[in-house]
Length: 639
Image 1 (tube, rainbow, N blue to C red):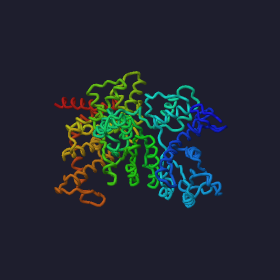
Image 2: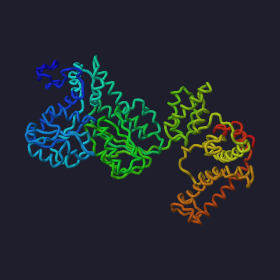
Image 3: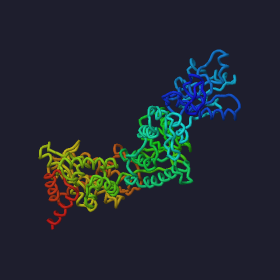
Image 4: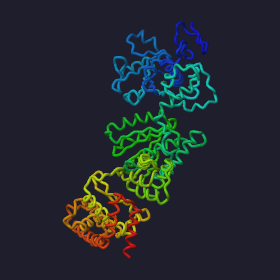
């Protein structure tokens, strides 16, 4: 006989494992077999209780929680219950065992008939009074006939504080302090024990360290705080409340249950708006895991299988958020994500999409319960976004400079990630110059202006570009709205343009009037008009082609959508200039009249254009404040 040193049970001579407490009689204590025996012990107990209540033999499906552990578990279960692991041919051999355990699958559907029975043979075994167990990590991979025949489905339980304490006793001969917080035990897997099989001191810190390392990719400790996500507005407000409820449920400080929380959220916004940043911030604030996945490049046939695997992964990490980026992918295969919600293993779905176009079957209670559209950030939002980023790099801007930075960013900075990149790049640029970050360092990064912008074009060509851009800028400065919102003028060649003039949106007056739209057309035509005045009609370049396209779109919008046409029509319709000669003539007449007005305006204020050209030729780029100062000097000289 061999006596177990842990529990004192008398085992048969030569036994390697104690039949009573499942610990190894010889070192090392932690092996795949001892772990499998430890886990299988609970499943065997559940089976015996079920057997008493059912009172008849049948097929049992065992859902394995731990990937790549099916064979070891099946062997352990067979040993504990005296079951056979293979189909026996002779009746005398079959009579030795009360049942069978199988775990080999072929093509993720049927069993390999060489080592396991087919469907009819399983029915035959049950009819002979044998219990049959199928151990499989993914039960849905088994042919549905097996699921329909099963009289019991048993899931391998998670580790708990109690089972972890017992495991430490069995495997490491270590007594765990009863007051120690072991809430993390629910995420343990066999490998967390195996990798620490040789530890000599208290095992818990080592096991916890292994667990933390394995789960690090699902944790969002380095994510941004919700407070920093100013641009998310209503979605951020919701996240504050939702994450607070999650933390209270985890701490047991509320009567709320997991099913009381919103199960699904949809974020709508263009690429680069920071939807994933938002999901990470929510997970961080809630103290739960995040599993990322994208189905935008998958075919419709692959979506469901892929999401099933990610959902199963999320359940092992629950409570968790499953972040699904859908883009233009087919969503018809996704409702099961919400319908599979389990109070014991809650997974919340945060979907992200570029367009707010989702099947009606998803937008309802207990599926997608809230939809948040992320607006493109305005100057006011960007100002708040920049504040903590600048503070983190010890950059102090005046209030006026911060306003100018925000105004310059509008239309060019669409996400927190882009704003962070701008600040980080400006910091590097300032460090190279051995000085503090300035407003111009930041603006250079917004417009991606090369730091050493050597003039690779002839000076005459750059001057021509300067007149074109100054024409746009002058037309802005000669209107109250444009003067307030103009932000930047550059003649530094970059990518496919030779220069540009930028302005921010008018947050105080978001609705366009007919006069506003006509001003917009004149601003867009200002570059071409300046070229004509500077070089004559024959000197106009191809540069204004994109301006003409943009001006044409504005004119078409006025005539077909806003009721601003010459005949007073209030019908809104989609324009087709290639087939509608009348509309094309109306647009042409409108653009010609506004172009004439633009040429006249610039001719009367040509000194302003030349002053802008002189300033930008000197420094290659000028800010909105510098242009406003040039304009004020022009007005004072004009008087």
